[in-house]
Image: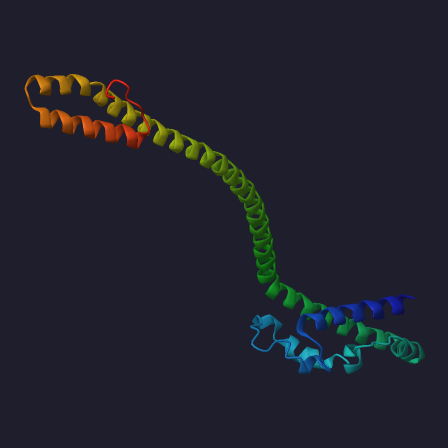
Amino acid sequence: MILFNLNEYCYDRLQDLKLQRGKSERFCEMGMFDGFPLPPDKEYLREDLLTVRESWAAARFDSLPHVVRILSSKDREGELGVLKEQRDIIEDVVDEVVHAYHGGFNKAIQNYSQILRLFSESSESIEVLKVDLAESKKRLSARNKQLHQLWYRSVTLRHIISLLDQIEGIAKVPARIEKLISDKQYYAAVQLHIQSALMLEREGLQSPSIK
């Protein structure tokens, strides 16, 4: 049972290592440390990887042949020792890879979390903006109707004021005509009468006092 657990443990560590650098037939062909700066005390890992058995990197790892070989070996302790040594090598390699990349990985996770947060905030802001725009449109629509009504009222009032000014002027016409007649300015009196009558006709008013 111990051998089975140990084998499975080693296999799991190998698979973790494979996932870190992609599939390959052998670890030595994976370029595990290509361009990867190793500390001086870890340079031996480049050579130690070559000692890992090729079958351990198979896509479908079968632990049974290894267990049978160890159990049937005359030197079980020796085989078990080799197994433990390779386990230690794999652990060291995985530790170095994790140590080398965990900083960048953590930074990427933080950046990703920040991006998600910004997207979430932007989405919320957009929803608020949509509500504000809808409310603004509603208010502008209502305000537009009010403005139109006020404009129409203003035009009407200006027209009424203009008519009142004209009426006020017409009201003074009889006195002006009488004065012109008294001054014997008959032609001017007739012209003033005609102009006043035309203006009243144009505005649709009646002038009983002038008729």
